[in-house]
Length: 516
Image (cartoon, rainbow, N blue to C red; front, side):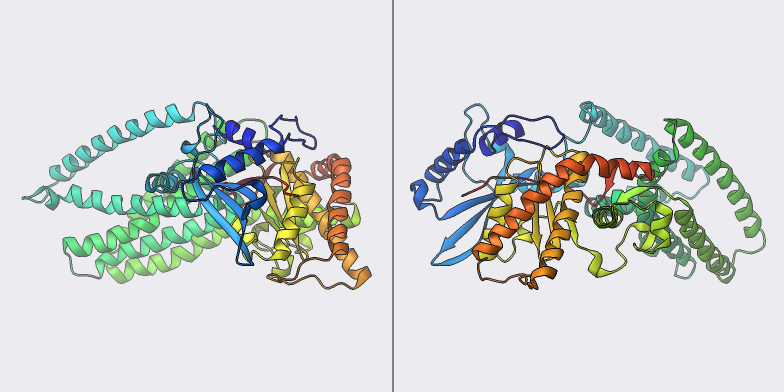
């Protein structure tokens, strides 16, 4: 379906270092746009020369598409957004359907962001869907069996309540666990992209949540015993613990892959399970020994107050000693700058010794270092909708209309948009190109004493500034095409992992066309 839509929208795609893909000419897009404007029920039919909106980009967000255009109404400029359900496109006729923003499309998009991987189905293997459908029913049946077993075990020791089913201890236990599972769904939907970009930070955060959950569950000793109070503390504590366990599980998968240097991920993961089992057995024995001394609340809280700081300190030190040469966004932006300005790439040890990045290399040390933004929302970058932004976008779209990425510089900051077909090498090349653009803009500013226009500035760019920006983008593009392989080889020579970029990918992919 995406292929049919792109055939309508984009010119022939020429890529740097990638296999070319043929797409329909840009004139086909203009014809489609005229067809759309004359047939959409909410618009008045008009010729191409009288269009009141000009195409900017088509952005894919959560299984839907946001069509963004420049709008001119009574002399004022701005950005217009139209949401469309991808299912509304008719690939057989090669037509673009009228704009739709149905409630079903919004709900399916929201739910898809919760349960499906980013950029599904293009980001997973073809067997992903049937496998996980079967896994869903398998887990459902297993959970039913677990509920019945829990009730049988609790009844056998005489703790089951008489009366309605909701009075059963097993049901109260299920409600406690269910609250945690619901909270986990919303947490994962909101933060799952950051598990790839900030795995160490979220591992530590997950352990903190687990400790908070344990403290809340121990608080059941301090309140009056009742089903309501039990559910309040037990369910509340379980929410923190289940979310923390989910974080640990997802980030731990990445650690196992990084630890396995000979393709032995299964063996490394299995031995990790063995180590965890031994640690749990030792913990069980130690916990029983401590309980043999006393069961009082002050005694239990004293042990808890001692164990939690030790636990978190060990976790933080674990994250420090796990030295993976990952290209996080702060690191790769720094490395690209170093290569552009000095022709060298520092190693992980050198980068950490220089304190160029923040915690675990997953954060910027200073706010001024945040010059690079990857795959943002188009509406967030073109938020002002001024004439300055319009001219700058048209220049960038003209330079990058045949590429798999688009650079949009503002001052000394550069935003990078990715085409749906962009691969890892395209993204890495875009970062290197962005560093070249930033360096060229800084040098031009220093030589001419120009002051970069402030964000939201409404004055148009003069002819010289437009020509200078176009020349910088074109010249740096030629240099990026020529030197990118050398940059990647320099990274690999210092043992950086170039097969993966660790940034918070929310799945925003954009197609664009040059209007001019």
